[in-house]
Image 1 (cartoon, helix red, strand yellow):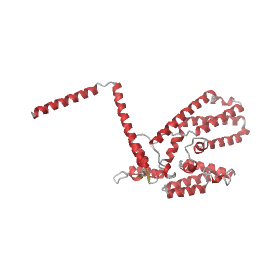
Image 2 (tube, helix red, strand yellow):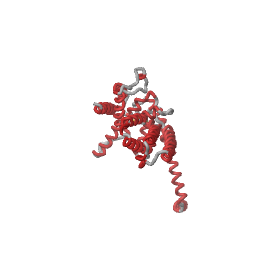
Image 3 (cartoon, one colour):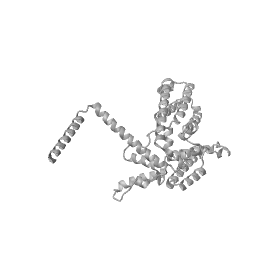
Image 4 (cartoon, one colour):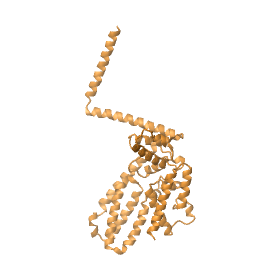
Length: 353
């Protein structure tokens, strides 16, 4: 009886397997695509659940050490070890020795090849979340960035970029004369278009890197217009240089997104943290700009210097970084930031001696 039952079970299992194999083999392209879509949907739902769990852990104060995010073992080859050591140091420069649990989870996903942690060209809102995420330069309550916040910011930036691209295209189609014919344009016409290009470029800066292509096109148009006007009216070259210099200051991401947006994500009290979270080249440029203000005697008066959004000076930055280091910010990164700022000051002074 046992053998008979066993034989029946084997036959039934074989039949089921055959039917399954047959059904898989006879799936058409549409059915196969639907199955793949369902699998991807389930995978995304599971991924979102894991992100939410990490968010909850971070909200409850859980942190993860950089050592555990980038484990380095004795058996690693020297080249691999060096790469990981450099990467680990870059993480310490950004997050300190520990980071919120959800930041660590997002980093781990990226290291495993499960998509980028941030967009390649973030808009204004996503970029500020990126600055704040686990960053010891910001207050603890501003370092926690949740999945839903990122998704909402990415969508808001996407809509903004789309609307600006439509506006930019309409401007190009209706107002911007073909650049190759600029030499035949009257100075008054060229100056009118230059003003329009500058205003559009200043607005462009409030949206961040999500409209980087449009910004590049506007900068090219600006250069061609200025060159054309200088050829026709060389006596006005210095005045144009000053006008462009003022406009360029308004296009600084840090300045544009704070000063020209009513809905800016940057709080007044975190302007210094925002500035010092930028890359070193940017900080050097800020040093050049601020030294220029100082030497031109247009710094705010004593009363306005007490405001959180005043133009920073070397003393402000030094004190801010010292406090940040005491609260877990990387000392090596703080030294690099201070050096970059001083490079900007020296560059300006050398160019005006």
